[in-house]
Length: 375
Image (cartoon, rainbow, N blue to C red):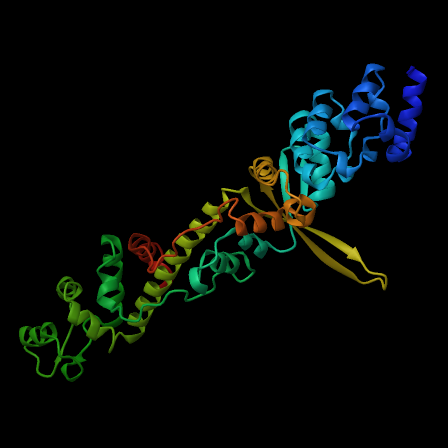
């Protein structure tokens, strides 16, 4: 056969006439390809015309070895070889392959000079990267969704109603104790206070020491003893210094809530570091409607980490598969891909143990730092 004959056969193949014009003369498609290659015109074949029934591992490897696989388009590759095709492309034709993946298969990912960015319709969508609670319990996914919402965790996330004012005073450092004693003296210093409202031995002792009957005064020299007596503190802050006691309790509850929220926020954003760099950025754009009115649209994005590695994990795990969810186009976006991979145990969701109580060290630190905001 001549070069002209070879080209005639190629034309028939490219016209889709493999069964009628070529198969009768060759044992199989591989034999035909080897024949064409002898005339150095293999690159003239339209690989999109390869019948699915003829596309096997041997043919795929042959095209790879001869450098012709890049002439094949993803849409024309049989289902069982689509992931192999993309793996080959990422290793041998990275730029074109990654552009195709982000433009046509995972459309919520942009390529920028400094890396890959995931577009989010709402920051709350990041909760899809977190684990659900076991047996329907409140879990990382639920708490992360709340954090990424506009309202955040909100107020009074944790509330301990068993705390007494003396417990708050016990956590104050020396400078705050001095400040508290000054406040107390300004409020009730040298003021006659009725013993009928108090049961503490401390106040009974003051009355006896001062030689008064039925009342007592708190003098500057009495403040140190008062600060070290829990019963006296709790009684005074429920009676003549009720407002000050209420402020102390507000200080405690807010310090506790802030400590709890800070710890959970760190867990959530720390977990995101497995998939992302930095935090969500939001761009705004003013859109003019057909009626002339204007609205502001918000576009959220976050920089991806390990994007290529995760895509390769998916492709490797699904080589040779023909199910629709074995291919990137089934998901259409990286966010949906992650949800599918988590569901199929191909990657791990972000998990952490939600604390039962606020960290006491954080709470104590907040009590002292927020002291002057409440008293």
